[in-house]
Length: 384
Image 1 (spheres, rainbow, N blue to C red):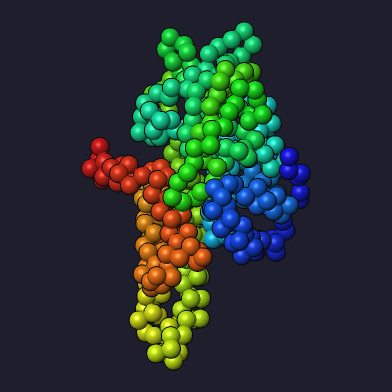
Image 2: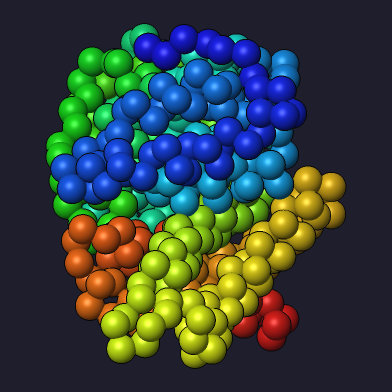
């Protein structure tokens, strides 16, 4: 278990940027091994950054979305697998106090997350259900017992599975009229099994394995928020802004890492027939400028939207879905431009650019995916 550390003073906010540089070798190893780099969590906890977005009352730093997004961008430059796990943790630390959980349970989970670095993530996706944003009832079921609940089911794409302290499991009850909602599961509870299944193109170190729950016993109050299925419509809108912008920031960080590498490559590469570095070629400068245009657009979008959310003035979940879509596509385009500039060097395993390309492509799989974001925007434009 990680030990609590004081939160960093304002002058220590450069720490995430330092981790971006320090983690490059371990991020490459995590990608090759397909294993989560646990030492990164120790670094973050020692710096007091794992409780960044938790309320002050629960031992956190009370940081807003703007600071969280800046932190995630730097972590994404260094190790996007770590950054993705931390992003989910940050969203929950910030948004759970705005929900309907029992106070004692909320205090326990947030205190553990902020003070002891016990990571939190919501496990929602199932093989047949897909993402709950597309509708449908989960197969994961909680059955009432004499002492509480017995939870059984399987969740896929469970980011951070091997290092989570708490899972917020999306499940249905076995009642005649099923309710749906959040069951809070300590990951040390009996009946939990992690099946290594995450063997993918990118974010290979994110430990996004299957988690199987086999009659996991839970107290009554760990059914934190149960509602009729229809009552959940629109309930996630407030959380969507945080999730969408942190994802946008993470993949912008990946693209910045690619930009950093290609800039160094252009300065260092001196072809014999040219007599000077590639960086002196106007064509190379123009190409790098196009990458900068994409990245600076992302920064402006993320920072302005985060400032509005921190001020309580918007934007809506539909809008942040579009921002997430735009930012992730810009990030992908930026890395692809870097790949075109580098030629064969871009696909060599000993250079990090091919890893950045594989990682940045994962931006498309996070909810809301392109069709969902565009349909929601189109319906709103049509007044439907």
